[in-house]
Length: 326
Image 1: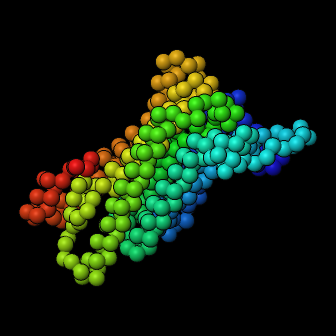
Image 2: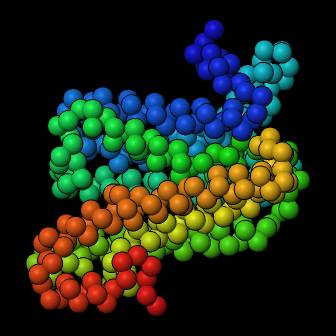
Image 3: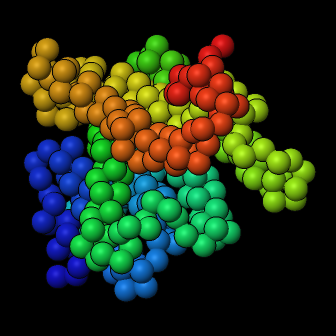
């Protein structure tokens, strides 16, 4: 028995939801564990953020294609014709028998675009800076450093939960859902606005840093562009884009199609469970940004450096911390 067949047998639950969810989460922890070993030995966080992006991409791809992998493996055992691999273009155009629903493709692509962009941006930044101040106190402590990698696996798993749940639904079942829901439109608008906000904020920050290094200005902190509307516009954008993903997925998961596909009994209990499954993603992201690793670290750092300066106090007083002013 091959490794693949062993894993497929071990995760062949009666529920398609669990058969997709648990292997995807297991992959997240596996990748993070593998990257953690050399990172701990080298006491280096250089590949931490990049590995997070790789984990997002890998888990998303696995959840998208795992149902087909199982079907092809079952056909091989039965000696029957293997089903074709899903057609991404066919799914987007609504072609029957494409093996995927357009929402599965679009949300998987949305995650992949975000993960690729952010991972590249953060890797370029740490390559230029050499270190990340978040790890100054933990990179020399192997158990704590390992915990940071497993925390990242948890972050990936919770953020991806609505996408993993959506990708676990059989495309034949999804084909019976309404082609376009109000939640689809609202969610995609939120995602587009959120990722645009994050990209623009990051680019403004990068340009400001480059200009400072070139001595084109003597500013100590950025107060222009989106940074004049919010003290953390990039974090606001990230929270918003994950909200958009959750809204699209939640609209399907809370419907009768989603309830049947996940094996829920329906009714208010099933709908609430599906809504919680979708909502945990933006809720967890926002909690991390506002209370753990985003805003608190940044605010503490800048308060220590510039807290006694009047211009900093004015900027902080007149600029919202998170939700931008109009």
